[in-house]
Each structure stands twice: as C-alpha cells, then as structure tokens.
Image (tube, rainbow, N blue to C red):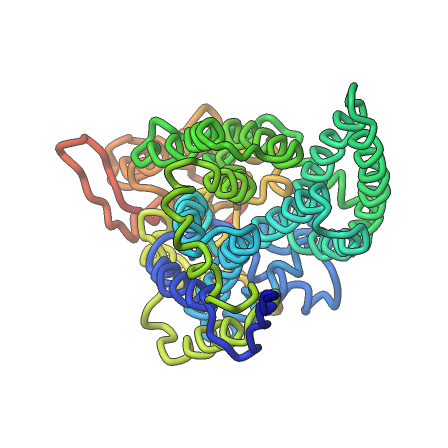
Length: 543
C-alpha cells in the first residue's frame, strides 16, 4: 500500500515559525528600554530623510555639522532605504515606533534562520535550541540602525549560495540576488559583505573544479562557477542602481580602508573576549569545531569556507560577529543532526515533531500570522508612545543634552562643542529643515568628519596645547562634555577662578566660562567622576 502524500498546510494555520516570531518580538522589544535606541548615530539616520525631503533629493553635502572655513563637508545618503522604515516608525509612534520597527526586522531575521533549519530536516525542538544560540550571538547588534538589514541580507545570500551548491535551488532562483544587491546598496554600506559571500562561494567551486579524481564533481563545480561568476557581475551592476552610481564604492571604502577609524571604535576592534560577558562569544566560537568534530555529517565546502571566512572577520572586528553567527549557526545546526547522541534522541520523535504530523513543511516566505503580529506590534505602539522607550543615560545623557538644546534655542547662533557620541542626539532633536538649527561640532560619521577633525576633537577634550585657540577660532560659546574629561575639569577650575587667567581672554570685555549645569557624581571607591557639565560664555566681539 502506497504512502499518502503529506498534505500542504493551509495558509491560515498558525505554525511554529509564527510562534517563534511572536516570542522573539516579546523578547526583543524590551531592549527599547536599554541599548536599542542608544546608538550615537540614530539621530542623523532619522534626520537624513528630513534633510532629503527639504533638499528635494539625495544629499551630496553635510547639513548637520558646523562648516569648516565656511565649507560644508561631502556627505552621501546612500543608506536612505534602510533609514526610511525607522523614520516612518518615528513618525508613527516616536521612539516606541522606532523600537517596534527594529524588533520586527530582528525577529524576522531570526525567524528566517528557524524556518531554514526546519526545511533542512531539523526537529523543531532542535531548531529552536539553535535559534536560541543565534539570538544570543546576535544580541550585541539589536540596535535600531540600517545595519540590521545587512544581517538579514548576509543570511539570505549565504543560504542561497549554500543551497545552490547542493543543487537545491536553481540558477534562476539565484538571479534574485541581483535585485537583493540593488536594494542592499541603497540600504547599508554593508552590501560589500554580499560580495564576500559570493567570493567565498566562487573559491569553493574553484577548488572543486580542480578535483583530481572525480570528473562529475569537476563538471558540476565548473557549471556552478560560471553561474556564480556571471551572478557576481550582475550583482555589481545592480549595486550601481543607487543615487551616486559608481562613486558609492570609493565613498564606502573611504571608511573601511582607513586603519585609524578601524581602531577608533569598539565595534571595529577584535571581539572582546576579556570583557564582562565575553565568555559567551568564546563559547559560540568553540561550538563550531566541537560540533563539526563530533558529527558524522560533514558540511559542504561552501558552507565550511563561509563559516571559516566569517570567523576570521569576527575575530578581527566585533562588528562582524553577528554576521558570523548567522552564517555559522545553520552549518552547526545541520551538523548536530549527525552527532550520535542527538541523532538517537530524536530518531523516535522525528516524524511527530517536524512541522506537524502528516503536514508538509511550510514553504511560505512569511506567514499571515507573522505579518499580522508585526502589524499589531507596530500599530500598538501608539498606545504606549512616550511611555516605554528610553535611552541609556550612561551613553546618551538626555537630561543634560535637553538642557543644552534649551540654552541653544535662546542663542541659536551659538556654536556648540560636545562629546563625540552626542552629535547624533543633538542632530535628532536640534536640527531643523528650515529656520534656526543646532549644528553639531562632531558626530560618529567618520567619513564626513575626517581624521584631522576627529583628532582635533580629542586634542580639545584632552586640553592638549592649543585647545583654547581652537575653541576661540570656532567661536564656541556652549560646551557640553563628560564631567570627568580634562576639558571639563580645566574649564570648571577657570569658571571657579582657581586657575587665574587660564583660558580667560580680554577684548572689549571678559570672555569667561561659566558653569550652568552639572549632574556630576564622584565614585569614591573607584576614583571616577561621572555625569555631564555644561559651560557657556558670551562672545560679544571677534578675537
């Protein structure tokens, strides 16, 4: 008697990927009270859209930072498509709307991981366990910014290349990578990661095309190599469909190719194994050789090389760690099915736990219940607008910065000097498309600020020789800085009259710094000074 074919699940059935998506949303959204919205660049990402609307198109000069010698610096809004959802979220429900958009993107990415594991034959409990591993590994990047789309797109690109190598998707399906790259190039500069995925896949096929013994393996690899080669060229052409054409590439590499900036930010530095919580990163990395070593199932060459290549990037730059996780977790998950202990444990449960007994695995890209849950989350944020989300005060001291904004509103022509990480917040809440605006002195857009300006910021903050002349040159009248910084300590002494004559200039009146705000706290146990200070002066005449 022949087996009855498994029936296709009805479109309206609430399935395990939908359950996973809902649970992930409940897990991720509370990050809106923590680090999710505290990224220094969130503010200018949001105001990019407003600046584009005001300009009537894409930008080529920076509208957010004080001009230098009367000249605005070059700027490219190449991430406009990745910024637009967050801007719409803000328009819909403020910070809660932004957090909801970020939550949906992260949860959908992890849902895709889970669904792919089910399609690879993992029982749902094992797929759920590996999903937890992926969630832990990507948690460090649960931040509202366009980078979230690169996480999703890297997973899709790696998945397609791996499945194409195994013969599970056709060359016609691979053509979808071309529109994906076109979207990616307008979403985030991380589209370069997509070319890394293609290059690694090409390398794997090249090695197999030189197989010394089996001609069939060589021929199949050569055919796949040709497809991937043409696809890489098509992907490159697709990325040129952006507001800046080919010039997007030198713009992106102006940051990636600068070793100074690669050493400046925490996220570009090697994965911090010695920092608190760093053990989880070490554990995830050790899982790869452990799983592959214990398993009777060996990964394909494409999957193995992708996992190793992205491990290299993860070790050299923390920013790449979540990308490695999204590439490596599916490889480890599939291999775990070949570990004898796990294999025996699930052998008796396999048919009952796949996707529901007698039902074929779901092939829908996204279920109706997942879409409904996403709409409900985003729509429902209007009910809690202004009541839930917040920024971490140790990263973005909103109380002090809001006071600075009030003082600047009373003196809209005053030039402001502030901490490097706070320029995005000041742009978010102080820049306006028309009328008087606060222009930041610096922010975290290193490709705009340039190395000379960034070094000048640090020289002023650390009161290196010439710091007073730089403040006078730029006619800075408001300073908002960490209370423990050398600049804050020096200016407070001047304001209190302790350092007689230090920093005081006289010309038709006294230029004197005055302390107007302080929430300074001293940790006697650690000998550290926390908090923020604001100082101001009035320049009635040029120096």
